Length: 187
Image 1 (spheres, rainbow, N blue to C red):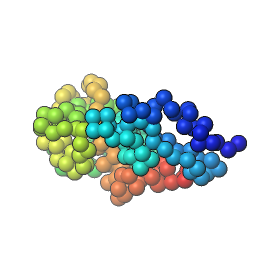
Image 2: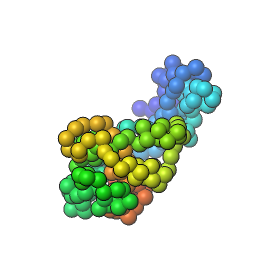
Image 3: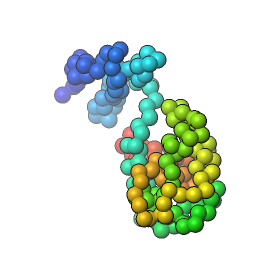
Image 4: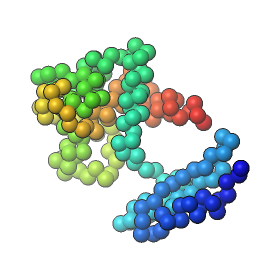
């Protein structure tokens, strides 16, 4: 049964305001994109509306893809969850206690969150930072919050590093790797 643009617009009408955050959607029918639209605002302070081509920070929802990518690489024998992180990211300092890939996955590495590090460095995390700049910032940590494996602390840093490791192991830029592994098979 065909979906009408009016039906979709009616469903999202309550978010299609200039005083409300919104969403972007695409309707796929029989494998074809038949409708795309932005509703509401991308940035209320700057009066920026959402459009189909808007680039959105998906935040922590990206962690599931990093974890699955690492799990697939481990299953294929390309890496071990017990490998030290510095095996793949040698620019990180050697800490008193080694950090493993498993500890990155479980938020038990002891590494400080890069969002906190950005604030301490006087930088806004509202502006996207490139991975190399974040690695340099993370690499300046000389001490950990705790001995790896002994405590839990939610960590964006760990998942950033998992993406770097996956890129290193496959010799593929991380966005291309995710596209090939998770999204291209469904396109």
